[in-house]
Structure formats: C-alpha cells, structure tokens
Image (cartoon, rainbow, N blue to C red; front, side, top):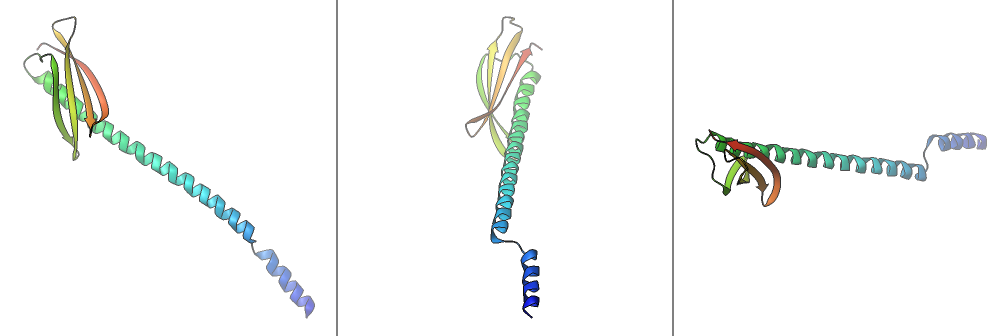
Length: 128
C-alpha cells in the first residue's frame, strides 16, 4: 500500500504548478496588460487630437472662405469669430496684414479652444 501512495503522490506532484510559477505567470500577464492599456490610452489621445485638428481646420477654412467670398478687400487688422463644430465652440482670430503688392492681403487664422491654440492657417486674399 505504501508503494501505491508514493506513486499517487508522484503523479500529483508532476501535474501541478508551484506557487512561484503561478506568481511569475501573473506578473507577466500584469505587465502585458499594463502595456496594452498604455497603448490604448495613447491611441485614444491621438484620435482626440486628430478630431480637434479636423474641426479646427473646418472653422479656419470657413472663416477664410467667408473673406474670399466678400465683394471687398478685407481691411487690415484683427478680428475674432466664434465657430461651432460638432457641439464644440472654437475661437478663430483673423489677422489681416498688408503685403508689398497692394492688390493682395495676407490673412492668418489662429484657432483656439478654451484658450488653448489648436491650429494656424494662412492664405493670401486678392482683389475681386
């Protein structure tokens, strides 16, 4: 009977994992999950920045197209325009500057949201 008990113990000892092996495996899984979580966070942040940039660009282009479509040459100076895109409010600061050629003006559009700059866009506007 003692030989049978020894054989059973040997069979059980070979089939299980030690506590150290389980802890090492859990440590590896934890590191992999942490890296995956960090990568997911970075992708989410990048998608948010890209969305902000696309919406800000739409605001800047709208403001510049509005200037181009007006029938008169824009006056030199600064102005602010509010723009709403996808439920978010952006502030577009238009800076109109003279150029060496009096038939053209340089227009810089700086878009910000909640005081933080998001995008800058420049163009030249000519006489119609």
